[in-house]
Length: 513
Image (cartoon, rainbow, N blue to C red; front, side, top):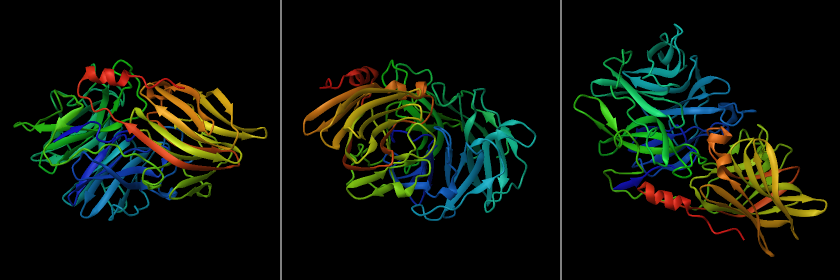
């Protein structure tokens, strides 16, 4: 059967995967968003369903005043003797910790800390022992991939930390994972930075303590020199074996807005790339060492399209998320509506504004919701960071209610257009295309075009956070806003060659009325 990359779309970076009881489980980074570490399940490695989050209690993770791209970095999920472990870094506090559960759909434990620096931690289990690694500094002051044995109950180090590999020479060595496959220990890593120079490298050894010998043709997988190609930034991978015995790398990557537009705003997504082991024990990956848009793989599956989202088809605590720790009294979430109570905290600051967000998962689509407001401001946002976000909103003052489009770029606010309304409610609409967002308000008087914002200003190349755009509902001011008739629908383009892709992503949407 054929599948198309990415296999999980939108801002779900740094994937890690394990297999248990015939299913696969994957976790991704969450940064400043709460609940933390989204958790997915799959039977075929292609279709992923979110079953919850790992960090669901404020006691598990500190996110107070965490700026965009702070907080929870690259998690790793592993399974041992009926128990799941998730290890990660709070990059803002510098804490490496893990949590565990015996019920993948239940609550996870409070954190167990490990006294070792670095980020992107991982766990390896063998012969009843547990090993912790990160890209940090060992006890002798040597930096690289650092490993130590730990007590899995307490997190206490049972051996000195030792640097076991320093990579292939690329900058920003990160994302170490250790595997025992056949006679070899394989150590994979990412180098080059999580941007256009990103790559996956690896080494192997007859001992888990090394010495590790780098693959002679490193990097084993990268799209850094692949052009023209929408898919870039491939790196940060985790090896996994499918139900038919074949190997793959589950990695992050991103899609540019267009072939010749080096901007990405959907965030780093999840890609699946085949791996082949040679007779000499070394493995290769992908299409001549690159990740392509589609592959064939054994299995009887059908890749499912993105579902339309509405208030009738949702679980608030599976896919929706908040900025940092929410004030729960500000949210009343029901089957057909969301009641949001605004505060003085705005989207411009690293606090916890009244905000509910979904990740934008495709370039083209429509996000809309009816908003009714008693005072203050409420609406829809395309949110990248405190400094970069776009809104279409209702604003109610003493003189009456208006609908507006506002762009916040680099902390500079511009109200593109503001129009008066006869009532206090409107259907607010965001129409998405690869390079632009169009904003509208629909009332009984018809559709009002309010403005356009370029998506490149919400990209990692300009905005700088390495998260991705969130489509959110928000309220600000001491007010109450009621959101109903939510709809989020995408148009997907499955395209297998650069020429078709260039034409499809360059096609304009209808001109605003």
